[in-house]
Image (tube, rainbow, N blue to C red; front, side, top):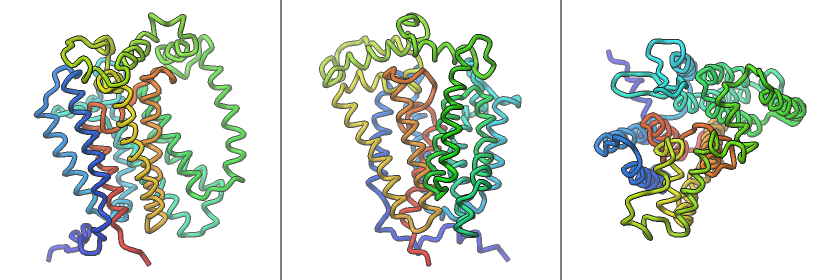
Length: 385
């Protein structure tokens, strides 16, 4: 006899379909349309057919995930956590790991595509932490506010994050740590835990920052230290480490109010031609030049709606687990957007991080589609007893 339990993973009848968030999907569609337009102008060897196929597959992923109960997904968290950790470890310690000539081993060469597991691991860690906190609350409400809970949550986060750091992917590691902080604050861990931790961590970060600026430090790569020093002393590194960011700022400023797509549509040259990685980490640069200040405000409004929808989903969630997942996804989007645009506008040191739904890269898009699918599923859940 077949095991019919597997068909209960997708239970369509009990969902509240009136709350299926088509407005959130429309925001995602608009961002992806903007991304495709920009990438056709700036990305080398860009294939519109490959992009369309990747986006269609991404929407299929989002639709399927939105139908799977997130409680069911969280039952398999131990397996997902182990697979995610092994994938990020494989980027550095296996033959299929690849640096794409960047000296950062962030990709797995799967022959068909280059897969960046750190993007997927962010989602897995959010689900892992939400599941962990949920179990602590279910067993004993007082257990959540304990040192044991705090250290176990940190350990769960730091194991895969350590492998991401070994990749030389500092930016993704920082985003994960910030997501952990937000989820710790939202979980119910009280001031008696977070207060002493903050009193120790903040001075430690200042001491660590001082150390990495010293000659002979062993924590960061030389190019990472050069970027920090260039950010602190931009006039001395104008033709060095700050050259990329300075050109980015000039390119964004040249878009003026309306953008060159409108006022200089016939012009063949653009300032962002002097900016590298403009299809991914510096995608905000051509966006600023093509769409101008008004266009950037509209896109920022769309990204803000994305974050706001995460918070609304968390507030309206039917249980603690759904609330924590939505908060984690919202925090991830918030910090990735802040860090990416901050680098493009030179208010932060240069570091590589994709802009959600706008940067090139199918791994990033598919991972973001998974997170949107989970948000949609949280929103259509019925009232749980």
